[in-house]
Image 1 (cartoon, rainbow, N blue to C red):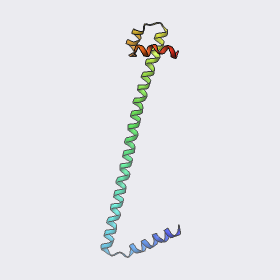
Image 2 (cartoon, one colour):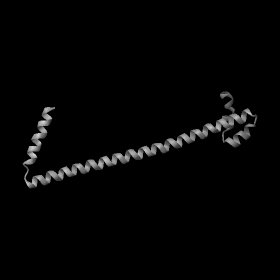
Image 3 (tube, one colour):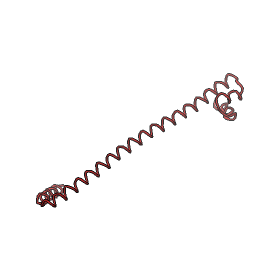
Image 4 (cartoon, helix red, strand yellow):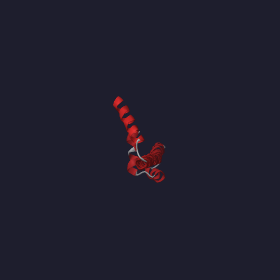
Length: 107
């Protein structure tokens, strides 16, 4: 831990002795490094935001689809318990006759 501190100190002493040409090169390389890191951090933030937005949208769509499907089966179950014919239940819910017939085993 102490050696890191000494390394930094010696590096600073070395930089302090740069001539004007070396100093410009060093400053330019630092700027390039900072610019690159800034670009990468910005890209990462944008990517995370875009991924989160996409995930929320997909989750919403999936949840809506599951809710609609559950409602169809719920409605069909109620219609069936009220004695409606299977062909009418299929017409109004969009379920197949086999799916409606399978509702008996769920009750």
